[in-house]
Structure formats: structure tokens, C-alpha cells
Image 1 (cartoon, one colour):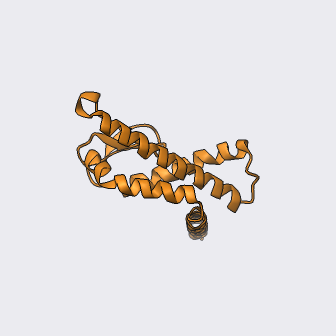
Image 2 (image 1 turned 90 degrees about the vertical axis):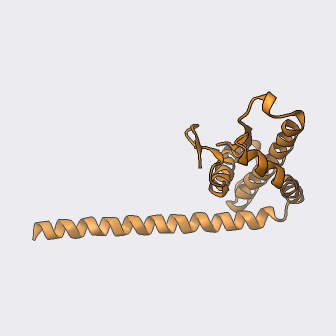
Length: 159
């Protein structure tokens, strides 16, 4: 009887924990959707995504060759030494990261707006890290097999 009661208590805890996880995931997913909707109204973010789209084929080639990886901060990272890549590739990477920075900053502004926080520089800096982590997670998830990705702990792996 005590054993049975203990098992039921554990099952109740597990069910409650699962429900909390599902609820949290749903809330995060809802916030993600709302952030996406919000940044669609930011002209600078739209322009940045257009730039990212225009570079996509060349960036994918660099990732396929293992010369560029997806960094833990949401930036594209050069994984090769300069003899393997030229000035054009370095410039391409700089443009890519400038546009990614615009997207991440837009996400941070959207988070502040949607969570009804003031857009102070301190608040922006605080949520910017969250925005960069989220953007990096999206990039890791979207990475193709064989691409370099940097995990949140800083280690590099091939996906």
C-alpha cells in the first residue's frame, strides 16, 4: 500500500513536470511566433534578411567546405586560415555578421516590446544575450549535416 502510494506520487510528479515542460514550451513557442511577427514590421530587419538571402548560396558553399561554422553567439565564424579563404570571403562574412547583428538587435527590441519592458540600453543589453542565444539555436537547428556548429558551452562539433 505504501509502495503503491509512493509510485502514484512519483507518477503525479512526473505528470506535473511534463505538463510544466509542455506549458513552458508552448509559451516559448508563442513568444517566438510573436517575436517573428513583430520583427516583420522592422524595415532594417527585413533588409538584413534580404542581404542574408542574397549571400545564402555562397555562405552554404563555405559551410559545406568546412571553412565557416555557426557560432554560439549567432554569428558566422571563419574556421579556416587566410590562405584557404580570400579577401572576398572575409568581406562576405563581415556583411553576413552585420546583417545577423541587425536581426539579433531587432529580436531584442521585439522581446522588450512584447514583454512590456522599457527600451533602455540596460534592458536591451540584458535581452540581447537571450536574442543572440535564440538566433544561434535556430542557426544550429537549421545547419546541414557536416556543417560546423558551436555549442553553447563553446565546443565545436560537426552536425
